[in-house]
Structure formats: structure tokens, C-alpha cells
Length: 115
Ligand code: DGP
Image (tube, rainbow, N blue to C red; front, side, top):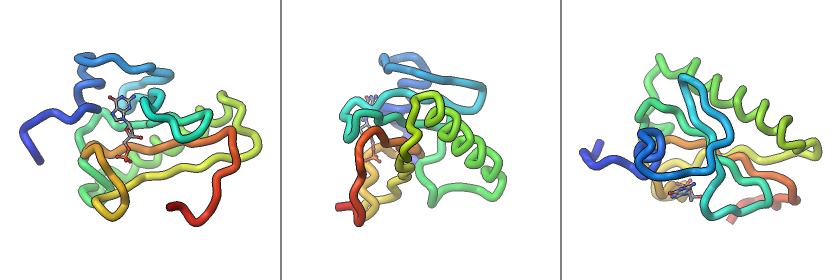
């Protein structure tokens, strides 16, 4: 892992602002700065894990927790018609920030396959 803090670690540390909509001891959820849908939220673990490819077996409950937070936020945000949950991973996956993050997208129809 690079010594330099990622932009998301800087948000966790309060060094740069973000529109935080939820936080607990394990994670943070905030609005994506470049929204791809009317609702576009990122849920990130406080733990510095660069990507899914870097997960340890012990991170299983943390990952489950992130998905339960996504479920709760989707309910709170009224995404009753459905939504998409995305974790871009690595270069071919389109990952641009090397701190694992879960995208929650909704409030419009999302086509498939993705680009
Ligand atoms: P990905 O391509 O999966 O690595 O997505 C990274 C997302 O992070 C992208 O949708 C834009 C968002 N993002 C990048 N920098 C910032 C930032 O400083 N603040 C917020 N809120 N979102 C950011």
C-alpha cells in the first residue's frame, strides 16, 4: 500500500469535507462528488483496505456490515423500485480510488450490461 493517504482516508480523518449521511464505528457513507444517478452514495470501511482483492478472511463480517448499511440507506432514501450496488475493483474494474468502497446508485433505471 502506498504511504500517501487516499482521498477517502482523508475524508475519514476529517481533513477534507464530504456530505456524510451515515457513520458508525466501522464505516462512513457520503454522497459521491460525481453522481451517476440521482442517488449516488459511497459506503466505505474505516479500515484501510485498498480493494476486494486485498480482503482478508477476517474482513467477512465487515463486508457483511457494509451491505447491511447499504440496505438500510436504500430503505431510508426510498429506493423502493430498486437500486444497484457496485464495487469497482482494480484497473479493469474501473476503480479510481484505492480504498475499498461500495457504490449505492438509485432513483433512475440503470441499464445492463454496464459500460
Ligand atoms: P471508483 O471509480 O469505483 O474508484 O469510484 C470512486 C468514486 O469516488 C467516484 O465515483 C468519484 C468519487 N470521489 C472521488 N473523489 C471524491 C471526493 O473527494 N469526495 C467524494 N464525495 N467523492 C469522491
